[in-house]
Image (cartoon, rainbow, N blue to C red; front, side):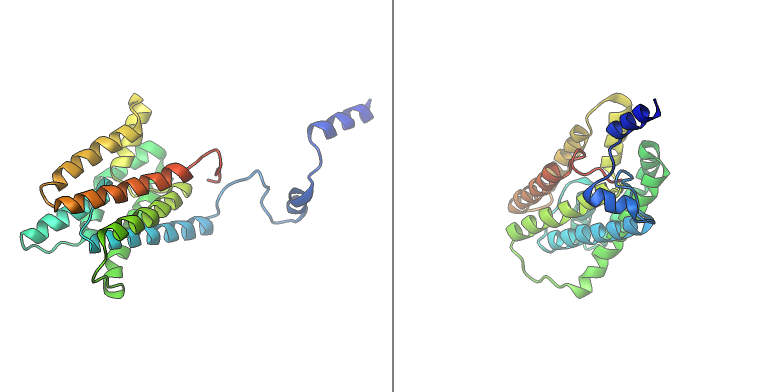
Length: 235
């Protein structure tokens, strides 16, 4: 009887083979099914992702373009201030705009998501301003700026998503509305961005608005093609 039970257990739980066998056999390594980041992995992932996002914004700003979300709103406000002879920094405005949204972040995903979002917004705000004296961009074609922004910021946002972070703002409100009322988060983000770009027509040259839309499309395409929970399940 015992032999039959052991044979049945072996069929249900076959012994590990190949790489799985080596990982299970070596002490101190995480089990392959325990797909969670360590704190160090989270920290370096968020740092790299924020650097990517800050670089994209720096290139976008150098070409006088904008984007969606609170980053786009912050850029738009800096352009409006410049037109009126007022000097405002993107980093300062971006950080201040996101302050009210952390309560939504806590409500949407808990304290971990809230703290990571706060850290991410702070890092991007600081990095975007720190790049100014070290990376001078005197001339860049808006099409190139839009393309590089879309790729760089898209990769940065992917990194933030995969480490349970965000750049705050409307995306968090969108999550809350989706969880509570079933209204798709993508629609909330789209409505906000459409309103933002409509305002941009009164602030920026028509060509700059067009190139900005291209950058936003590329960014969203990068996320749409690569942000797949069924492919990438580490948290």
